[in-house]
Image (cartoon, rainbow, N blue to C red; front, side, top):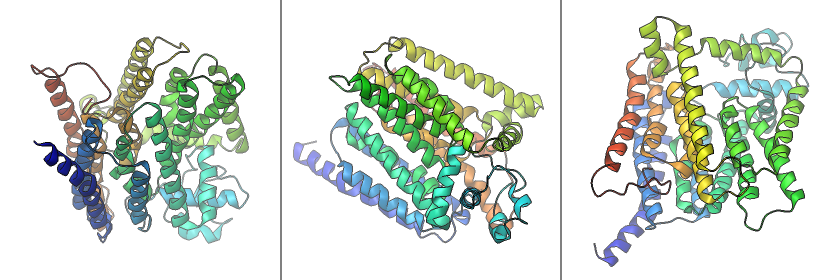
Length: 471
């Protein structure tokens, strides 16, 4: 291809790719009811994911680029489209609103289940009717309750979703700063900023995972800034960064328990002089947030134990093990043990690859750490008994740093689990089967196998790198 033709093609991608993505999102926005339009949504998300992979590849290649401001602005516009829609694919936001309103009224949301509070809060009866599992006290940790109160203060479903969308866009800003620190093209950010998962699950459904991702990346940004800034930091600033990073990581864990699997990342990113302040910030922040709701917060742990022992949705490994063993307990225990082993191996290999907890780390070390947590998140999604699409938001948030073909496909295929919404939207019946969880995992597995095969073809570039697709 001649240079003028190549330049013309690149300009068409720079202009045409975001335009096509916007048009697809706009057509999805115009759908009458997302529960009854799941096939159209899944197809639209597939097309967008393919376009994002193309844009990412061209960006890594250096052929195209979009400015940081344009990427964030585009991300804001497509989120606002779904911000104006009701939360059709999930009812979690109604629990958020109830907890937030109870807290704003001066009471502890862990004290009672919503159904048990109707006599005290008769004005909440309409909201309680919309809450899933309203017979159980809230499962969400203390930091989430503070976010819920802020969202409820802003007003209703729209106020809660608006707060979570703003936090999500702030996460995009933090991701861009980390990408810049690691020398990665800003175009990598489109893998999250324009991805269907945050648009649909945060802009559309308003999931609290937005706050989790913001708190997590705030912590990671502070750790990356203090560890990889040339010239070093004054020891006082270094210590302050550690305290704040630890506090934000505690906020992430106490918004939703999933970021517990990110704790080794904080240890690996930290320099030796910053590890103690970060640990102190984490512990004191956690104690303070738990203390606000003590002792009623123990009711939340009881609900969590019920979730761990009984909840399941779209988990292929769990379903297959239960079918083979005939025991739900074994089907939960084996994946839990396997995930612990896999995560331990991944983090240990990363520990060895970067030379342990040494102070002087390179940009390559930082990317290896992000690649490690990317692998751990994929292992979690494959092995968890409960796999809702919004659980994959954590995977999408890591795609700009360690994106691979299997992860890209998995970040789309999780939408297949929404097929249960079709019958549920029409009849109110929630019916699952084993085929779609298998299909959900078949795509990522095929992508992983094909990627592995392509790396070993004669003449292919075989060196492991995080800076090309599909790495």
